[in-house]
Amino acid sequence: MKSNPMVSIVIPLYNGSNYVEEAIRSAISQTYSNVEIIVVNDGSTDEGAGKRICEKYADRIRYVEKENGGCASALNYGIHLAQGEYISWLSHDDLYLPCKVERQIQIYEKYNLDRENTIISNPARLINADGEMIMHPGRKVRGLRTAQKAFRYLLFGACPNGCGLLIPKACFEKAGGFEEDLRFVLDWNLWLKFAISGVDFFFEEEKLVCNRMHSMQVTAKQKQLHSIEANRTVDQLFHQLCTMDDKTAYLKDLYRFAFGCKRGDQKAIRAYLRSNKIPVNYLKCIYTRLYVEVKRCAKAIYHRIR
Image (cartoon, rainbow, N blue to C red; front, side):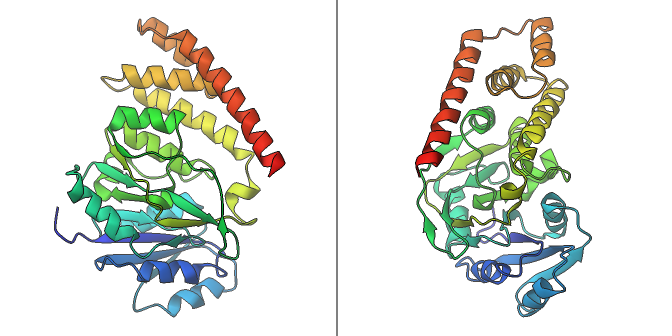
């Protein structure tokens, strides 16, 4: 890896004039110098408010416009334009800590990681609409997870925060981009595809991003899409794995997830496993379903007593 590789920060913008200036400033303020900042206006209907803000930083950012196609479409467009060797996603309502990119680039050298095939993941702090910190329980995970273990973690652990990642551009060339008609699980969908294409993930515990929680987010307004999109993702992964060699461990994990979380076409996956004489630990599957139900109930109780 070059000692100072370029990192492209892609900021998808849609009707975000109330927050995007803070996001841009946090990108400009990175202690790592070799960055390009690409703001993709995804057909905003704010009478040019977001555009006028971006024009104030015309000498520091690249501003482009496109017809509205959703966050995934805007990200794909920005990644296509990016000249950097690494991609860093920043939502228009979120913030980077000043050292975000620098710390993540340093991780490659510190742990001697594969610089074209390893995604760096750092967690995020939560802030409210006014930028005030929100206390919340977080999952602590650290270290390298090679592709198959990363796939299992993505299914049974947690979905890494998209804005907390640093992704080699080569990973997109290997696994493709975001599914443009997904709204809720576009990140989880692609991270899983990265994993089955052989990409590793390295997790660090330092929080380098601030995720803003507010009522206008897609995830807050369209949660009913989650189940539909999660089922679709499982079925996509299944059909993709059926065309690949050396996929047994992935398929077994996918079936356990589908059974335990009631996702995707469980019968089709089970039939494929049986016809190919791939053994399944049904006790593990049942345990997973029980665990998921207990976790769902505990989460509901937690939110009720907050």
